[in-house]
Image (cartoon, rainbow, N blue to C red):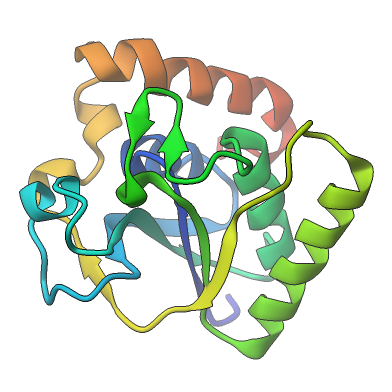
Length: 179
């Protein structure tokens, strides 16, 4: 097996992102957490206040011999709206903004290329506002947030928001799902 790489993405609620990426071939692990802010080791309550500068994010460990960074970003842009600043659906605040936290110059280049391509395709009626910024630090979220959807599929938010996103993703990327 080749060495693994990391990707860190924010696109609304981390429960949605984690549930999607957990089921992709080549993804080894997904950790929900916080990135992009100034508060050291923030709590969920602090992040939800909108005062920390952090976004809910996931850190993905993946095998690039099975799935590429570009593939991860193609999934990312298919599962959230990258045109709404500080919002995903009913979730509003800077903690729900769309961000690609790059780990390497190559990741930055790929992110900028895919945003340019998607912008030229005019898939969305509004401009893509996804930030592309270097990852400074990633703080894992509290344990109860990890694998939240897998453990709580009938919880209200999971049933109404996460489940439909996961179903749409699974239909679109059925050939890329883990067995």
